[in-house]
Image 1 (cartoon, rainbow, N blue to C red):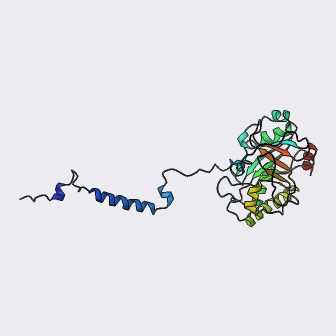
Image 2: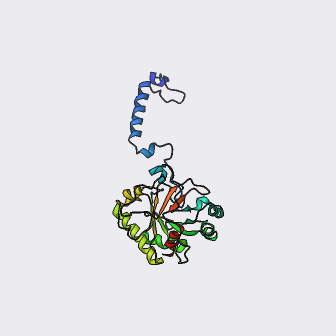
Image 3: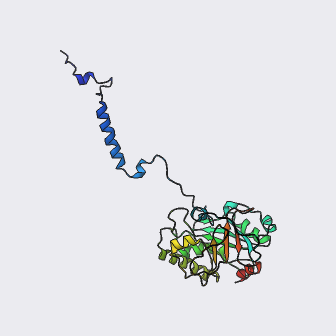
Length: 287
């Protein structure tokens, strides 16, 4: 004789699974939510977080607007200052003759980054600026979290960042600014950052006989070096500030040598002023 079905079994669906009451479903949902909330934040994310740019894509001044803003441009009637530009692979092949005709007399070209990247347009940019008559130099985008200062100085010199006493080649520049790939100070303490920069500058001077230029922003320098003043006696300063006046300089420097004042200039975005006539640019090139 077949067994009679209980009320629970009669309430089961076609699959034979018993139905769950609304109260039970609410209890389960609450327990599930509490379990999810106890997981790490990354386990709940349906969308990826901010993506860092690819290594090698950094360029001079890429963090300036985000951290310091933009507040106008300097007056155009400064006859004792000389116009210059800086370029990287983002500009591709540069119209150097157009820049020369507009009054640009000097240029810096990104050569390297870290110990892993060389600008594929370096030849056209570095030699092209020279060929139209400009005084040119090369710069290195520093990544202090990937290799020592000495190793990066060697990589820079070996890949276009050297110097020659021809009167048309400027000493190399160390671009040290906000980290586009992570922590602003590359995970270093102020004393650790000062040591890294010293390591780079010492090796560059040993390799070339010249003091490298430091490119930086005052706010970054304060944050990441503790506003260290010890490089100012020997190292030319290239300051980044997109405004009508250069503003406060890092500790130790009473004056700047170069000023990157905009990233939205004509022909190429990054335009600069050398603090002196073109004869002073040549003097820096000669050493």
